[in-house]
Image 1 (cartoon, rainbow, N blue to C red):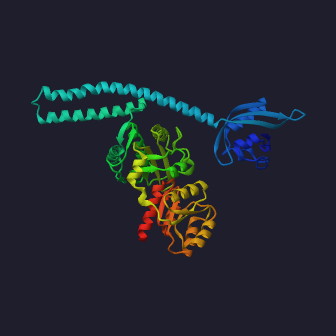
Image 2: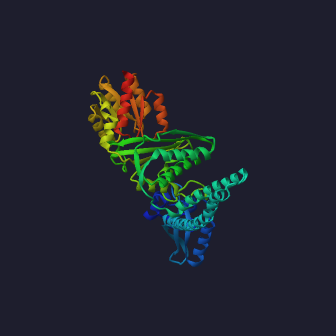
Image 3: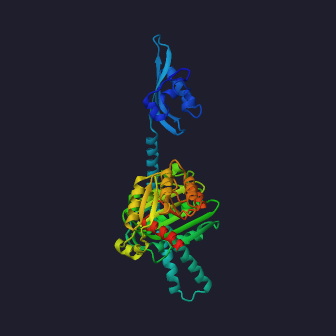
Length: 487
């Protein structure tokens, strides 16, 4: 870019547009300070003085883009003179180094963490050397001195208990320092969830209501490292606790789920097969959409400096992916957040589908109207319904759905409606359908479980709700529940 000596922009190229977002027509003639700085910076005044005295200047500056985002640039200023050799303007060449500086900071933080891990490992080793004889003595003394009085025996027991607590703490330090893969064995997730729930119940504030919904024995087995899985779940429940500083509800649930082709095609990391799904949800402050896209990035954190490393969720994702699993996250600001952890189960899908007896969910030729603006969702859902003896017709928007329903209302048994539709909003679509037929049966779909549209739709008389992406089993169950109410 080029600015004159009165601080007005005279020339603005594509490079400047790419960094700052302003088009040339928007930038030329504008005051540089007003456009690119939040305030007058001493560094800018110093740069201006230097370039006038020496003819050039180079250094780092913090500027802002059109959207208000702060960027760090390597800036080179050159004084431009007229034919009479009088100062006329300043040529400024900026290079965006924001990402470079961020990576450097992350690298330094990673180095500090590595150093901390080495230090922790050394401390843990020394602590083990201290605790080992203490534990041994607490066990040997009663054998060597069997006639100790009750008070002395109780003191020894207390000493042994606290030494064991210290030993457990050392194990946690070693796990942090080691970062080992661990041993994968067949485990029952319900038992680990019970342990995590016990810790939460004993240590979390009383203002947090803990709601549990999982069997400890009927869940399918998963091949996992128990310590790593414990770390994943503890990390998520601690995050949930931190999201509810004024109290709230923490839900911990688990269930057996068969991921079918319908679901797998809607989620990039999903594979057809059997999964154990662990759900950790809270009623806390929620996560903004822009932050939700970044929560799994290493070192990204919304907590104050010193309160979080930004490694928690990236570690969670790494562990889950190393177990061939995947994660779904739903969140809404001031409503809460829901994490769903999918872990592959060690079961035969044919056997499981037989056990679930999907045949009992088979339709009797009922017509279902599928309304969704996504072509893939419409086609996959239609094919899935037809596989289980339902008929299906599809609509890509609200207007088409209303027209089809008005034409075929006597045949259509259920309307499967996406709540996040373009053009006509879902509430309007539901109102019109109900005016056509007050007894219309609607199953709502949404990718946001706690979205305000869901509550609004429910108040309008929606019969069932499906959280996207859903399995065909979940859809068939919802249809069965509606049909059972009609019988």
